[in-house]
Length: 346
Image 1 (spheres, rainbow, N blue to C red):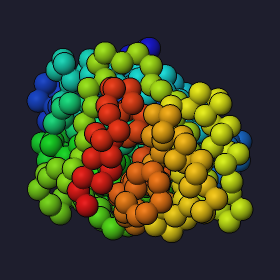
Image 2 (tube, one colour):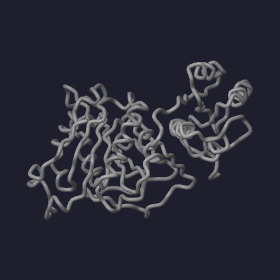
Image 3 (cartoon, one colour):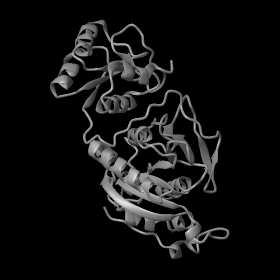
Image 4 (spheres, rainbow, N blue to C red):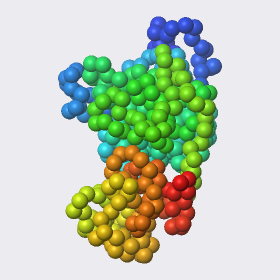
């Protein structure tokens, strides 16, 4: 992984107000993984058919000279792809890189990332990195070559937040469209809109005004938030998501088990409901020691225990329920401990 320093001279003419001496600025590490923020197209009006992860971290940093006025920055290219390609190896690489950075003199980290699975990576890091230093996920909804590209301002705000005292103790955060969201609760709600990231029930943590973060609340820990020590974990177990619909039967679940899934999440209908014909197969899967979590495809809401077999997912959507189940299995937790993660706060 390459490291790219950003020089103070690049930003001198762009800053408003007196600039801090470089030695007085916080140290922020940027870990780049690609995505739309690093995407490009031959057309300045193309916001749908561009190539994700086409620009390296050095070019991203050079495009925002104002960065050197807010932090001393180093950059590492962990991956360079669309986030639909992010896998457990990239997650583990990020976890290792961030843990090593926080063990040194880094004050905060920024992860540039595609928006498709940003919430999953942010959620994973929120549950596994033990530090009160800011972890800020950032991306863009328009590629770098588009008119009105949102990546540069998003990146500047993310670095500012990562280096701020106000950002400490808030867990992993997501910054896009001037808004600051908790990675624990935030999800992508629209395919293309700039305001796609929202926490529908819980709201935003704060917002930016003239590149200054304003928070609505002091730092607070979400109720029943789990944490996982994966320092001794080399590989994460396979956990699959089965989608619920009117004619769903056991075939998708059986195929997942045959493929080696050690846990199953059902993106069920309504309040985690599954058809009666599925109850027996779910019970058999659980009897064989494979946990099944029932979430909801609705996009919002709490899934309670209910009467169907399996564990209600509580506040977690299917993709986040999968992360928790994967981490719980990786750390050898019992069925009772797994259930407590999902329903302990209800």
